[in-house]
Amino acid sequence: MGETAYSPESGERRNVKPAPAPGVQTAPRRGSNWKKYMMGYLFLVPAIAIFIVFLWVPIVKGMIYSFYHIDFVNGNTFVGLDNYIKVLNNPDVLLSIRNTLYYMLLCLVIGFWVPIAASIAISELKFFQGFARIAAYLPYVVPGVVLYGLWRWMYDPVGPINALLGVFGADPIAFVSDPKWSMVSLVFMETWQQFGSAMLIYLAGVLSIPRDWYEAAEIDGAGVWSRIRYITLPSLRNLIVLMLILQLIGTSQAYQSQLAMLDGGPNKATLTYALLTVKYAFTQLDYGAGTALGVLMFLVLAVLGIAQFKLNREEY
Image 1 (cartoon, one colour):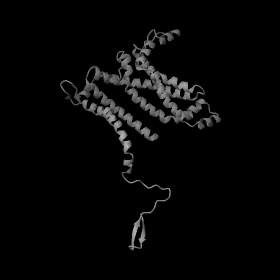
Image 2: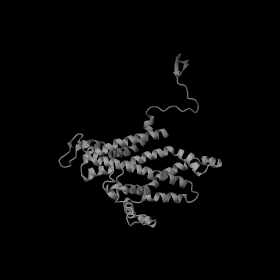
Image 3: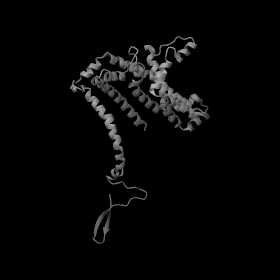
């Protein structure tokens, strides 16, 4: 509340707003913030427009099209839930879900720990640390066409991997044509290509840990494994959980290597959910059923996205 002051000219008392204390900033008037940041908002308009046009509009249209039989010649026909009933009654859907879960499990068992181990190992290097970073990241920039051609040659029955196994007296393995090995072979290939990008993220997290903690642990007699167990891994816990969720989201949508290398074979052993969606839409030209599968996947990924958002909010 303001103070009262006596005016000798009028003989009245008026409310006078007290002066702010030295060093105390007064709150800005309403509307001033909007004018101050208006130019920033205007710069965001193109990005928001692109985001809406190329992301949310297709999502909304996909949800609508999932209730229609899409015909670009005679026009679309509303069919209700027929597309959902069709895809859910297709035995390939259950098979693709099982293959996708198997692929996600293999990526966790084979590939998830590789960038963590690589980042810790590189951070412990005293020399050539920069060279090690570049060498680990190089496979990530290999074009897909070159990558698939290279690994098909390496997985060939007379390729270098089977030649190496033959040196030790092992029989050749049909990495590509054997259903037992086809998915595992794809996971090894993708781990080799993609671990470098995740490794840089983990390496940034490792290097952000205060070095004083490691020096204090060394003074107390802690070895390398003790420092990793009690300092490095606990400090990376939130980052590991975040990367785990991102990997689950990414591997659940995998279809590129399965399509380019094996086209879902052999005997549908690498037919993932996303690849089945692509086949419905662009091979069978059944866009309604394809969008129905996409909507179901969107709902599952939305749950994972919400979980990721909550983890980020708890972290920061």
